[in-house]
Length: 128
Image 1 (cartoon, rainbow, N blue to C red):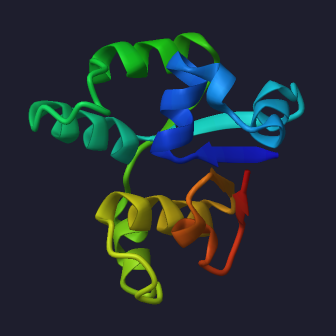
Image 2 (tube, helix red, strand yellow):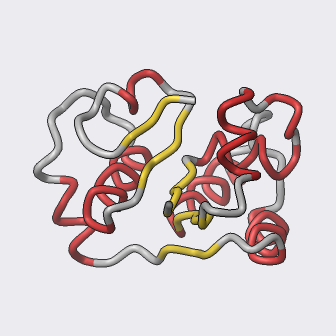
């Protein structure tokens, strides 16, 4: 299965794996799953680090390199993903989360999240 991880889960998987839920850790470790991250997550980390947010102290380049070195595949942001955002219900205003939802829908991937607001969207989203 193709799994697209949201930014929070990516950061936990990369730097604090002990904080992952049992379900998330099992799905990430399952060799039958292909792991993906969005360019939007790298962008989010870069912006929030530049704002000096204490929860985003990681270097986005280190995060991206580490994910690629650990067999994650990067999903670029395409026009169809951006267009997909316009069709989403207004359940959540975070633009980074909304593009991840649109990407998962457009690509037929399962979006993994620990965020209840993201999990409230219809489609291939799983709260872990």
